[in-house]
Image (cartoon, rainbow, N blue to C red; front, top):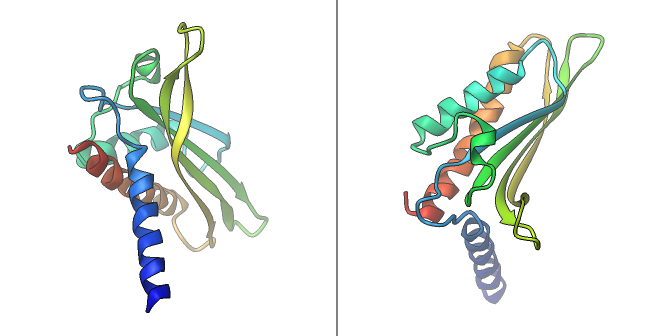
Length: 158
């Protein structure tokens, strides 16, 4: 019984500690979106990824900057999205999706901001050739954005 209670306390404290890092200064809830893809395929484009993320954030009630450059030099943070997609000879697709929420932190010289990752999720995927790659890639992306949104909304009382 004590082991179960200890495990429950550890899990609750971990969940709380994850969302507390998503708290941004009041009035700085608007976030930037940075999409970077090391290897992108014909199945999904960078602009499709960005549009899917913006649509999902909008549906979840989170405001965002239309351009990542608008968020630089401001308190708050940005979502960093990286899709790494590869294709096998038999048209199966595999790869990874990394999503991080980075907080803008002021450098020691007080002149520049840099991003510090405070939340991240990574998903490794495999999509057999018989599936619609574009739909599956967007579905994976949406599920992680929903997870982020839920924690971000809770942390910032939105």
